[in-house]
Length: 379
Image 1 (cartoon, one colour):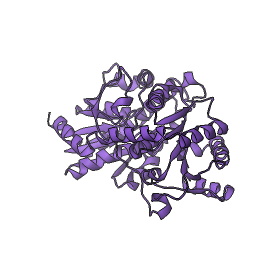
Image 2 (cartoon, rainbow, N blue to C red; image 1 turned 60 degrees about the vertical axis):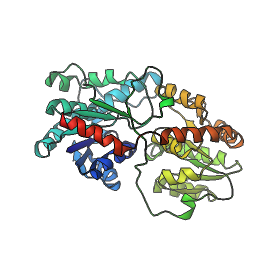
Image 3 (tube, rainbow, N blue to C red; image 1 turned 30 degrees about the vertical axis):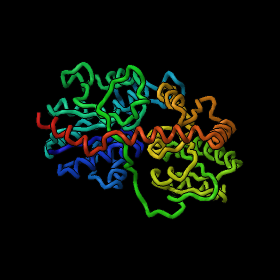
Image 4 (cartoon, one colour; image 1 turned 135 degrees about the vertical axis):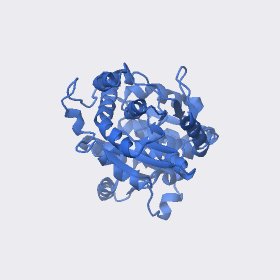
């Protein structure tokens, strides 16, 4: 069986989420390739997967300015812009990548195509080739309303294929703990989330606890590349150093170097999150795949959320008790300090986080899901 995985987006998290299933498919004796925009192929290679670049000459940022129906795509600075942005941007990624994917399939014919949550090119390619299409959730979040805008962006490509809308998947794989799936959401084939992160030589402090409580702060490489987000990260770190805890910042090397220079008493480095988070008593982050790292480790979370679309899922996590959510207008450094102090002083958050880790650990591992893909390919 040949399986083509398609990684969309510009964040490495989209690759990390697909890596465990792709590795399990290869370990079962099948052939795999991972297609992505060229800027993401180093991340694919860094987790030991074979990478193929599509959409040569484009980046995920440059395509926002292409001359297509709907015009330029702008970052969502207000809640009502969020769903159109996500739908149109990922739809445009699919449109720009499709020719390269068809060319790839002409010389390496897949039996099955797997795409992440918004990798709409997987749906288009599966339809064009007449092969099964699998959608794997790349994080735990559930929200509706994006596909409408993806269909609008992809109207020319859909019409060319004789379709009115994007085809649904032949199989949906969900990595969300069942207790956090919103009522009414589509239930998928459950799969245990396991880490698929890049690795490095670890230093002892990265995988062992110290004498003090430890709080990790991370906003992700993509976010902290923005000047305003780096300034916010610095403000958070400065405020959190007042906690009776060791502060550790997980960031790319350039950001970590600046943090170390500004805050000599703070550890800052790039660390595979599945090791670091297990040594922490709390983690402050902006959501996404880091949430699953914390869930799997049984570590309480403080999530500083920017996007209204994520609110339904985040409310479920807060109700479960494993985390505290700070929303768009509430995520000041002072409020973040108070939330961390609350998590560190009330052990109920740690107990609920351990419960969530047990629930996640009971889901079937990626190796068991390979049989489902094999059955689809034989149809």
